[in-house]
Length: 403
Image (cartoon, rainbow, N blue to C red):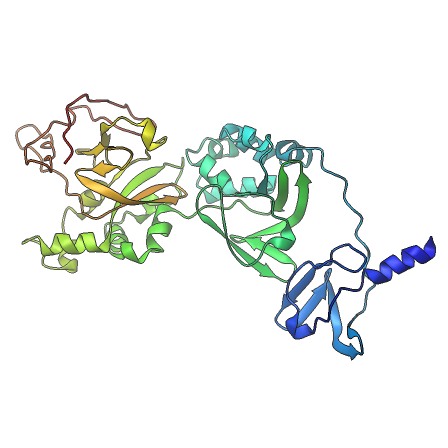
């Protein structure tokens, strides 16, 4: 029995084939014994199960030897997991995470059979996030409107163990990418360190991390897209960028975002706006930008009425939204693309939406023009209709002709 154990141990130090240091790469090859080794390559340095190769490329007639100064231990197969992700999190005292999942209505998602990889912040990480998000307490943090988005940013579909986490991006369940960095054996996800890896559950794997990660904000996403550079400059000039960051309570927005080409078309078609500088100097620039923003549109487009009004951040004017078979049209302009952000959604549009002028007789805004025939259609009254949380939804039944 001792000879068999020794033979197995020696075989665990051998992999098939001749792999020189220059050809070695981060991987998990199977040894001759059958168990896997964990190779990590950083520059010219190679580690095996965390043990550094001291001397490499010692060639022999039937292979190559890499010298290490520690005897490797054959890993003992872990017992099959018996707890789902929620049960596991509860058992490992990730109490704030479990409470947050319940508050956000996500708990059932991790009690099922679908596989997930969860980057799980510790209780201390949640406590630190209270101040980082401008909240007064853990209780108010757990009441944020964007809580579900933040939690989904910690989740990746499928089961990915730490050894398979490579530098680059992984798509989160929230809809934006999580950047992954690797420094030897240390794995980082969006700046958070994986402190305990590969805690297995029946429906996936949990990697414990030391801070709460925040998905990119609306401004982050817009800033990363060259097509929105004029819009970002305008938001900065109008001092509105902070509005679309992470603020107390976690408000969520839907932004109808004009492209650079849309702003160029506005300038070229206007006798009053000579160039980009003149655009940024407009006294009503902030009002124009606020007219492109509504509280986040909740639910799938197919669940919304085919014609509705949405109250904007410019409280004196509404947008008119039409849904001809799921393709949103706002004030007569079709959406080009939907883009996710941590605190809302972006719909790319090819036009700048101009607020209607104020009616001097009563202070109300004139109704927007119907782009099909130039006639005016009433889209609301003194009480603004709205789509989003915390606002009254008004459904207006009209006969709408879409060209």
